[in-house]
Structures are given as structure tokens and as C-alpha cells.
Amino acid sequence: MNLLSIGGSDPSSGAGIQSDIKTFSTLDVHGLTIITTITGQNTTNFGMVEPVSKKILQNQWESIISDFKIDGIKIGMVYNSEIIKTVYQNLKKLNIPIVVDPVIKSTTGGMLIKKSAISDFKKFIIPLATIITPNRFEAEILTKTKINSKNTPEKIAKMIQRMGAKNVVITGVEIKNKKVSDFVLEKNKKYYIVDEKISKMNRGSGCIHSAAVLYSIVKNKNIKKSLEFSKKITLNSIKNSKKVGKGIEITNVDKQDKLKIKLLNSINELIKIKKIYQNIPECQTNFVYSKQKPKSINEILGISGRIVKAGEKVIMAGDLAYGGSKHVATALLTINKKYSKIQSAINLKYRKETITKIKKLKLTTYDYDRNQEPKNVKNKGSTIEWGIKNAIKNSKKPPDIIYHKGDFGKEPMIIVFGETPDIVIKKILKMI
Ligand code: PXL
Image (cartoon, rainbow, N blue to C red):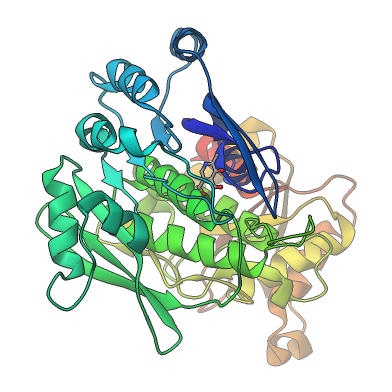
């Protein structure tokens, strides 16, 4: 996936283009950039602003568009009317998701748009928005209206929608009882997204939010799900902010989130595989991804529910959680002790045709016989650990697959292993 960020350069990498590259990279997508303005700033001061010329702005666009398929665009800092109009001319005929982050002022007090350009921003940029993500302050400036009990968030969001944005989210519109709420207005739907309030001064959370919104809208097309995902990522990035300079802390997408994002991406891939429901066993499926060298299943990410069949559809029931899987996580833990590079696994239905295909593909396959399980193992309930140990006892290579044919009352099973969830998916695509 290629995502383009159009915005300003922040040399301290707290916000703007540099922050978006960091976010896209953590989300595992390729980030393209068009710099509209160069700023001089750090974590304490906002210095100069120098918009780029129309010529180099246009040349950046042509360089990108002639080479890449662009899956989505985020518009951040567009400083003056010339930049606004040039961006509009290039984007007006595109039919891809565009997230507009209407940045007006930096946390350190610098103006990110000329006052005289705000009316052109409304006229040209807002109508490009699949979704616009103002915070409370920005929503008030754009509508020239204070949010209060008479001018409700809904009224203000409707005013912004009338300017041409398809969907509107006003972030941080209400803070009370240690909760922060975002108000969302879709075409025919309105709702709040509520999550915990983290009281910590930071830079960059708005940029992370809008970059994550773009990513998730391109990925799953659903506005509400995308906003919930982005809010979580943003909150975690605030919790994970670091004092890298002398002033305000800079937000960072959390590394733990990186495991979650990768696993979630692969679960989405899995769900989309044609006829995958035929490979979900009666006891359902779990898909796990481990930290390096896990000491216990509590360091292995799994699904707290499972991946379940619903007719011919497959859905994820529950959330990702460390310790969320027992069975598949124990299998992975056992493998990882011998082959530490293997950090992901999934269980699938045992099907004869799958085994035939696996053998033809020359995947490294081991099996074990549950009939041979010693009684004390059966009683202790540590059968999977015994089985996996048994299967790899004399192995020289890490397994792609381990299977067993079941036992009385026990369902046969295939487990696919790999270094990462996307490698596991690649193996599944070959073998089913
Ligand atoms: O956070 C908004 C933002 C966007 N773009 C640039 C910025 C800032 C805030 O400082 O500097 C370039």
C-alpha cells in the first residue's frame, strides 16, 4: 500500500511530514511525501515558515503520480492560497480516500496556515475530504462558531459537512470524567467515540491520528472501525511519548502496537481468502504472534475470542490480547524454544487434500500421534506441548507445518508456523 502525505516539514520530527513517515512505516506501508512548506521548529520554539514555490510543488506531484499507484492521501499543512490551489488542481479528479487534517496552529504556537488563506482552504481543500479531522479549536475557527450547549458538536460538524467534506470527526470535543470524546458525523449517521483521557502534554498526536485514519480507511473502508482503531493508536502513542528534546514530549506509535498491527493485518488477509471457512476447524481458529523469545504464553499475542465460522463467512470474535490464546500459543512457545525465529502460528482444519498438497509443496512437515500420548500427559492437560515436542524431537529444520490425526473424541488439526503472520499467510495461500 502506498500512502501520500502532503504537508509541512518539521525538522524535529514531532509533527508534519516526518511524523507521517514514522507512522506509515510503523503501520507497515510505504509513505510518499510532498512538502508544501519548510518550517524551522523544535520541541520548545516555532521559528520560520517558508512555503515552497509552485514549480517545485508541482514537480514533486508529477514525480510521484508518474511512478506510483497512490492508495490514499493525507493533506496536512497547506500554508497559502497558491499551495491550496495547486493541491486542489492535482487532486480534484482523483477517486481515492483523502483525509484532511485542517491544521491551523502548532502546539508551540506557530501559525500553520496564513489567515488570508483560510477561505480558500474551505473552498478548495475541504470539499476534497473523504473525512476531515479537526480538533475542537480547529472546528471552531473553520466555522467561526464556539461549541457550546446551543452550538452543539453536531451543529458544527454539519456546518463543516456543508462546506463539502463527506464525513467529519471533531476530536477532543468533550473531556469529562477522565474520558475524551470525538464527535463523528457520517453521511446519515452520528455518534461519539469515547476513550480514556491521557493528561500529558505532547506534540504530534493529531498527525498520528489523521495518518492512522487514512491507513485504516484505505484498509477496511469502514469509517467507525477506522476511527476506533486510530483513536487507540493515538492514545497509545501519547502514553509512549518521549522527551527527546528539551521541551514538549514527542509522540510515538508504540512498538507493542506494531505486533498488533501486523497480526491484525494478517487476520484481515486471512478472512478475505476465498472459501477459507472450509479450513476453520470445529474448535475454531486462533492466530498468534509472539514477542522475541517469549517466556510464557502471556508474551504471545492471540485473539481473546477466536476466528470463527459464521455460515460461509469467517469473522474475528474478540480482541487481540497477550495471553489471548492457550492452545496455539503453547504450540508456538514449544517450537520457539528450539527455533527462536518462529514467532507466529495458526491452527487450521485437518483435511486430507490439504495434507496431499503440503507434501507436494515440499513444506517442512512433522506429525505426531495422539494415540501415543502417555496417560499422565492426558490427565495434566499438557497434550499440545507433549505433541509438539514429540513431533520435532529429531528435527533439523524449523517446521512449516505440524499435524496430528486426532484421537477418540479429539479433532485432528494442522498448525502452520512462520517467522511472522504474513509469512504464515503466504504458506496458507499455497497449501489450501
Ligand atoms: O500538528 C500539526 C502540524 C502539522 N504540520 C506541521 C507542523 C504541525 C505542528 O507543529 O509543524 C509541519
